[in-house]
Image 1 (cartoon, protein in one colour):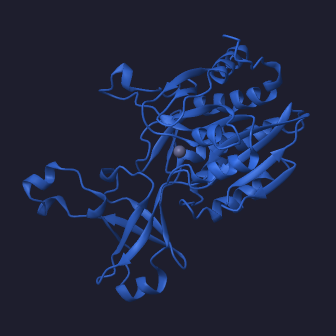
Image 2: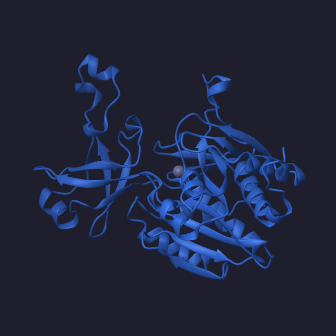
Image 3: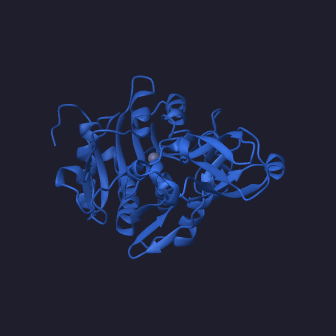
Length: 353
Ligand SMILES: [Zn+2]
């Protein structure tokens, strides 16, 4: 299945800072019509799209639709815009990057900081911190004040590009999984699925899994799939035990991260389902970080039987991220098959894989 580059590009480029997902929500609601039986937006703003199954058990598959960004907290006396982060950035990657301030209109700006020529020798050696940056819009203070107000959000500007067998651009975390979930619903169109599938496009994941928690408590799932990116540190200098995943080696089946231990039965089910359908996979074992998986697993009444399908991603939370088409394609295939065959598995605790 070829990746639809134009669609992926659109999904990645629509802005959606945590708490301000309006534009991506509007885009997705339109995209989902015809693919599911019901679409609702919960009070926090997550989209809950329901595709009915044969039996009344509930499966929640969630991909967060927010992206790391910033929020304006001050316009200084010269008209430079100051901000605080929404989500975890690697500050050293921000130098001279273009951003868009979502003010009364979309205002392009650049992340400015001190030029190297006037840095003291000791300053040259250390990486800049977030507070060292300001946003230069090229406008005068008076013009900036007409367009921008404290509380406006800021997202990265960056076109999605194809590079070799990969896609490179901003917000692949987590728009690549948004794409995976949309394409899975498309693959399931017209097919009968065993259980009700709640496809959730959650809000505010980047500030602490907030939208997925309330969505899980609303849905009260029996089964769950977290859909997100994971570290691919398959890069020069990396040791085998540090890589987590590698680009191009297939979809990643999460075993553990900093906030969730996937249900061992789900890990086993996903591996067997992948093998059965010749789907390329690798394991994801991560010591830190977390995704909506933890919220899905814990926030329904009594918890749910949850695992996760992750897309290996290089340069996570930097200004441009990178994924491989093989991994994306295999992620769609695995999620599709995993949803279709969920009733064929013995989920009792006594079965060992
Ligand atoms: Zn993410």
